[in-house]
Image (tube, rainbow, N blue to C red; front, side, top):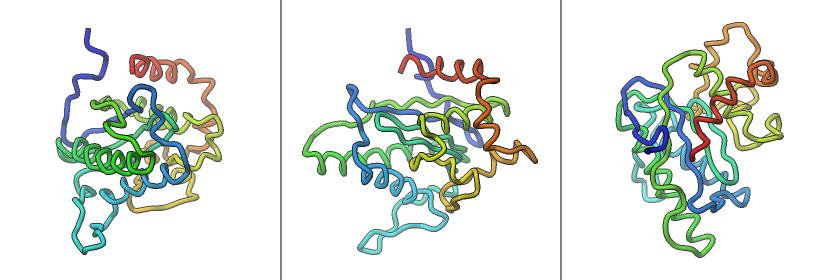
Length: 203
């Protein structure tokens, strides 16, 4: 039986929760530099202006095609919440970031071969309630989530701003509600969180 979310439906103007992890229980993120490199690669493709290499050549610019709404990078895996305007944007982003990061990681740690599972998981989100809760699920991944450096929570709380991270589509769902309180008050919605975990249980 195929695992859930294995057959991905790519659609324009849609929200997706993307997840991938290290191959064969490998930890893709070991040192602080590794997390920073991965996020810089996301920035390369999603910055509000095209980024050039040291020879003046522009990297592929995906910002008009896809928005990064939320993220969390953990030692063994990563979560991304995106909104894509064109059907192929998600694949182009994951392929570009994954290939470049694997090359960096293999060179640094003197290894060969793939680093991540070859097929990332992508779940389409088409309900506001699910969209709210998946952002919270992503931000609650680290036990010390309030002070965790490698998630987008600071962008939601107004402590950071960047052109390549765009929390606005999620925050506008809350109107005058406090997002920080929503994240902290997870016990009353544990059933929803457990459902999200079950969606990822077969990974």
